[in-house]
Length: 147
Image (cartoon, helix red, strand yellow):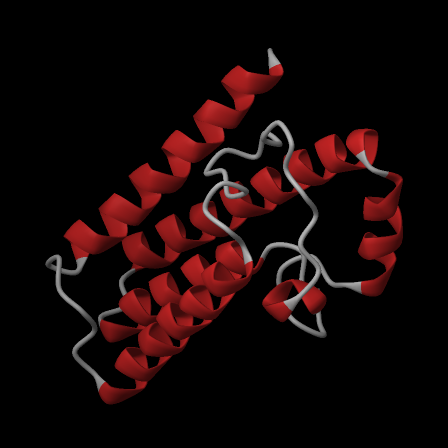
């Protein structure tokens, strides 16, 4: 499968899984305090991440934009894919507000999809940048200090 097609499939799956989770939970923010706190933490972390990655550098697909620069400040100092982490935390808040077998299954599919996107992006960065190999050794992939 061609690289860009694979990237578009992963992005499509990501949004399909997010949409299913949102529809499954009535398209509203979490209803329990704990789930709402998890959701807000994910949103806050995402905003913090965006602050350190200019929009011209950002790409929704795992393809590397032309003239993109490696960001190693802010959340990127600890993990290589902080936006994926943010999405996972926000969607965990949604799932925890009213967990069902379907929502747990879809959440696992979302986790797998984001890990595949991260893997694809990292493969492209390693080809493009020697600096990235060093960066990989100093940071975790998605979960700060863990994974």
